[in-house]
Amino acid sequence: MHVPSILIVDENDNFRATIKYLLSMEFYTIVEATNGMEALDTLATQKIDILMTNASMPKIDGMEFFSKVRINYPKVSILGITNNSNINTQKDISSIIKKPFDSSELFKKINRLLTNPETNAFPRKDVHFLVIDDDEVDRQAIKRAFEKNKIANHIIDAENGLEAIKYLKSKNKEYFIINPVIILLDLNMPKMNGIEFLSELRNDPNLKRIIVFVMTTSDDEKDKMEAYNLNIAGYIIKGKLGESIINSISMIDAYWKIIEMPPY
Image (cartoon, rainbow, N blue to C red; front, side, top):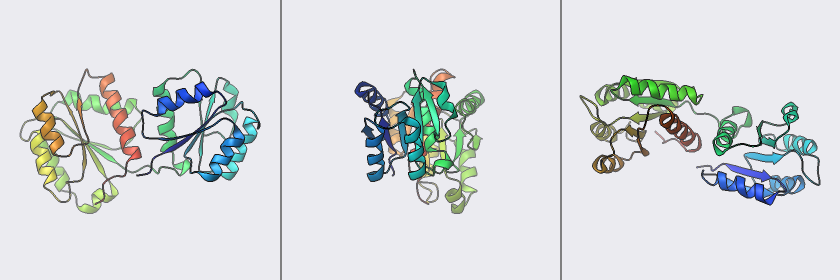
């Protein structure tokens, strides 16, 4: 698995330390430089995916620095950090983030750059999401959370595990190579509940490697144990419909963008 590398360029030690602390919450390789010349030396010797930098820096003018990076390292995305709106006009900058900003805004900017095809860093896979939940309100809430997070991936839904298994088994192996699937699974459903569905899924040679996140109201330790024994990627307890689901979907979206999908 490729771990994204981020180069933070700023002469302020405290600012670099703060950004490094925020980014340590995710799986990134963090590299630091105090000025543009030092950053250019780093770019010459290390693979960097995103360059985070202030436009004002010692030893080399910010605009000249951006131009050198763009010419010599065209695959590196540049995230400009500024409190000056004029930086918007700089063609060499991939994106900007204006001070003050919070961790949520920073992660969104970084994830967008990592999945932008123009950077050639992380080509976006055509992942489909299968939402399995007997509650229509919850299914619609999940779909709205995708919209709120501006996630355009195709979403399929099923009312229970039996309906979902029939759908998945109707596809051949080649389908999953071209259209990898991530499942969002409720546990308490009629006809075939979530645990029964997982057992059926893991016993099928074409389906057993599909990534599954459980999203349920059940806080029962037995349910958690059974689900994790069936190789789920995560167990999410539904809170209030709204912000908690939006945040959960944002996390899942970030997850699939940095992992390698299972081979088929």
